[in-house]
Amino acid sequence: MRPRQKLLILAASVYQIPFIEAARKFGCEVLTVDNRPDNPGHALADRSFHCDTTDVDALVELARRECIDGVVAAATDVALDGAAAIGATLGLPGATPTCVATLTRKLAFRELQARLALPHPYFTDSISCAEFGPAQIVKPNRASGSKGVRIVTDADQLQAAWSQAQRESIDRTAMIESLIPGQQGTIEGVMHEGRISASMVTDRSTAAAPAVGTRSHRVPAAFPTKALDALHEQIECVFSFLQYRNGPFDADFVHGANGVVVLIELTPRAGGNSLVRLMKHAADFDMPAYVVDTALGKPVGVKPFRIQPAAVEILGVETSGIIEYDAVEIARIKAMPSVAFFHMDRPPGAFVQAFVDGRHRVGELVVVSDSATGVEMALAEAHHRLRLRVLP
Image (cartoon, rainbow, N blue to C red; front, side, top):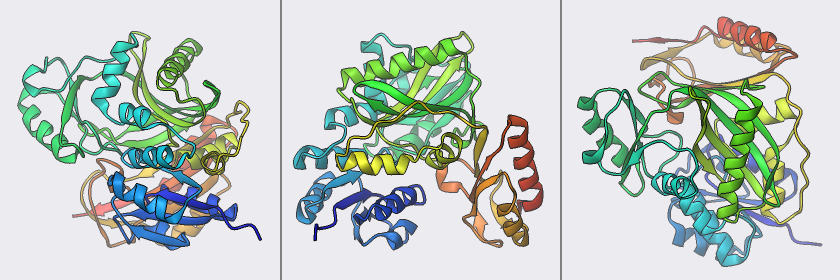
């Protein structure tokens, strides 16, 4: 009997569960690793290991010892260094360490954009060199999930935001860049032989300023064709330079008020914030299955997507306190014809924090319909039934 292929999945949060499930469906022996033993993905794995996903040397040693056949770092930037090092050491598919190091360090990515003459915001790695305009955005140099990212509209707020960004950054460095006004978007897709073979573009909404954490994605997105063409050209230009030719990618961008598209972030991985679940229902594409196949070196062809109106909302609350909602309505919400997925992370009576970034989500809702109006009506009905609220 042929032995089962071993797949190492870096991190085991709620956003890695679809990849764990896909690997198990394919008959893989699934190994999960992170420094949170209570993460829900570990319970679904064949075996789990306690190790920080930023400890590259330890991850490489684990991969060597277990003789893995593939490695996946999905929905998290900070684990990509480990995945790339494992791939380079064991000869496995995936992005190179140089590619990953450039795209997961915000300063390095901005410097590459400047080098390639691509649109980018003004940026600096020094608080003393900040040119304060109408609004700036302060970011950790190396983090994920919008942790430590803050919009600053007053010079008096700058030092506190800078210190917080440094604390959240793995390398304890931060950056400041000008905030680009415009329409926020995300693109999730697949590279094949150096070109984008298929993609899904979303209208992205964020938490209220000064936070920027993702709250929802809606498709189909309302961006001009010219802007999307420019977006594709920029992504392919960056990946060509970094020699990333095949695999998943995720990017956030802004279509500025001046009509220019600017890449905010670009990474060679599948996205978080339940984008893969939205993609399944809106584009009929199984991104976790694709990621598992490509991680194991299987050639996969992907045709352009046809997008159906849909949305995913990351549920959160505006103020910290005791969460309450109508739990008896959960089954009824799940039974609504337009609801593709609904889950509450926290029970009524639990203390929750105001939504700033992905750490503060309290649930997730995915709806799909035959029209954008139908999507909004389904979201409204689900919220009306749930009556999500916070008590002091």
